[in-house]
Length: 472
Image (tube, rainbow, N blue to C red):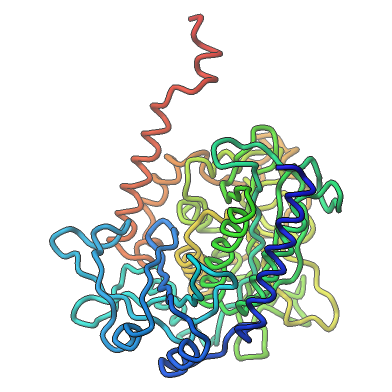
């Protein structure tokens, strides 16, 4: 496809979305609270396809559609499905599961799906007896967030910066531009795709802070405005769907693969996190304490650092994830914290007077190919463990960790994340914190799946193997 034709196609697509959203009267997202609201909206606007979304163990979004005449029954009795066919769900002898749509999550999909007007809703997964299915990743996060009240907190805010690549097709990583960090048109050929994606996000009630071209060619980032953790996990799943689907509809391929290109930066998901005592009071802020971090923030951060090696299997779950987590490509490896030092695992953004609500920590090691429900849950549990144990936060690391020798890092007591997926599995297997957070069944299934992944990649004979060793 010629470049002018490509850009014109994106413009037509964006205009089509705009007309569709205007016709559906939904820009900024629907504000529905009950099944009756959803049914009325669908009936009034001719919605014929209602998509129910949920997430499997590895973070892949799953979906099935129901028609308008069936949705009332879905709200009342749920929709049955075969749980044994979903990664990490039930065994074959106890496979029946039921999905109940959550009316408050209903949003209009800002383009027609199969020619139909469509809305989507996240679903609550239950057992046939009506009880909550404890292994559902969304339920894991809900259960973990409930612990905040036990510690006197109201909610946790999350703000992710999920990076991704656009490629010419899905078969090989052929870039569509040679732009770099913050470059603009005409070299940034993904700008129109990003704009269309931002429009789609905001039309579905997911606010965006900003977007830009990233460091590597064809690498991009759209930053979602912070939200309460469960809402953000839903929003992040929607974001990944929209990025990939809008790219597909415009003839390119989007991927959140952590390290798709040799010699270029990988794609991470820097995750900003804060905890509030009530709707307006940031429990991480202190006017008197050092770095403007409260004792709560310092103990929470100490807990995250203390458990970072355990968290890695959840926040960086793929064999490829550990090809991103290497020195030299702006990815954190060493377990330390800092204010301005971006080589550290966790960064504390500088305090700005009058911006107390923005006091937060930034976890720089996760990637967007994680399961956000499980990732946010284990981040929270690690931090709460720091509070429970009143962990002491070490001084910030002001040196460039990448420049230190192994001896110097050992002298400073600086550990590193697992070197590869196999080490991450070994560390996670011994983690009481993970078992307590995501459950014995979920962790065992993840361990089994990831050991199989490691074995598959370890046994693969790569072109580099042949290039380097065929002469032996």
